[in-house]
Image (cartoon, rainbow, N blue to C red; front, side, top):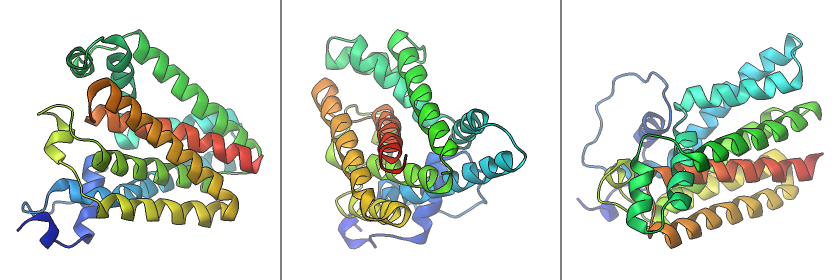
Length: 256
């Protein structure tokens, strides 16, 4: 059976997405090995929804016991990193090192595969955490919690599904190559979920959030295409982080 003969979406895809994008202890399940894992990309925003709910619930408890907004913002970022195994942050650091540390596509891919972190990776991580912490602190101080965290977690993972489909695999190995490419329906469903979350969270003013998320993912995809000719798991992780930062900034702009 080829991909076109398979259902566009299955409930099992949610479990596949959770298994790939989180470190949650999932129950044992008999997977359909004939269905490519990439077809579960439509459910990436739902994985984001779950980790966002858990992080927001934890933050709500901390707020209730009286912790300051800066501490709560840091706790949100820490809990998101723990829930996902910091895989997106790792992708951001590796992508920064490779894309800007190498002079040829081959060298850039080689650097990205190296487990050591370089100056570009450190700068990207520090800047990423600082920007997200600043935005979350401001939103929390303004009385916002659930909508920003959930919308950001959902839309940034929808962006990953788009880049998976838009760009070919840059190397013949690695997690992204093993997962495959989802085909057009999956990123479209993911985009619809992301758009619905934005509108539910912020109404028509959320259109600015959608525009910002689109610009962030297109920028990420364009850089990856230019630098290495495609995408890898690190590029997808970096896309999630860049989109998350951009969306948080856009939410600050329309709410504060």
